[in-house]
Every structure is written in structure tokens, then in C-alpha cells.
Image (tube, rainbow, N blue to C red):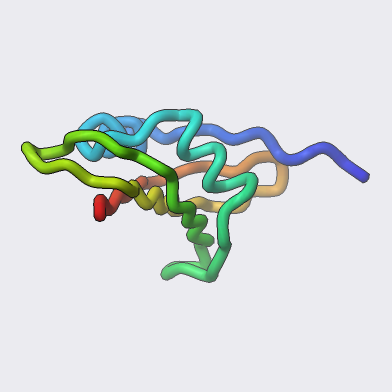
Length: 87
């Protein structure tokens, strides 16, 4: 069994992670263990619900959903953007 491809974050993905409250660890966890689905332009999406139990935007939320959009390249996975949903 081969090891998983390394994950690289684009500059845009890093900006969106900061704005939307997602950490490297959460995004990597979504990619490695979350649900995957096809996305637009031949990309992949990876989604994972994470126990949050904190404040975001002045409201308390129990769960954070992290959704990473990824380009699957031959030697790496490139995260191009990240969305978060709090509920």
C-alpha cells in the first residue's frame, strides 16, 4: 500500500481558511478521513463535520463543517479553497 499523496495549500486556500476559521489540521482531516465527492472543473471536494462547541461571528455553534476543494495532481493534492459552515 502506498503512502497518501502530500497535501499542499494554495495561497487562496490559506486566505480563505483564515477568513472562515479552518485550521490546517481540520482541512487535512477532512481530506484524509472525510466524505469525498466530485466538484466542478474536475476537482474533488472533501467534507467533514467536526465538533466545535464555540463562538463564531458572535454566535455559539456545536458543529463546524469543513469543505475542501482539491485538485488531484499526479504527485500531490492541492487545496484550492476551503469553506466552513457552522451549525
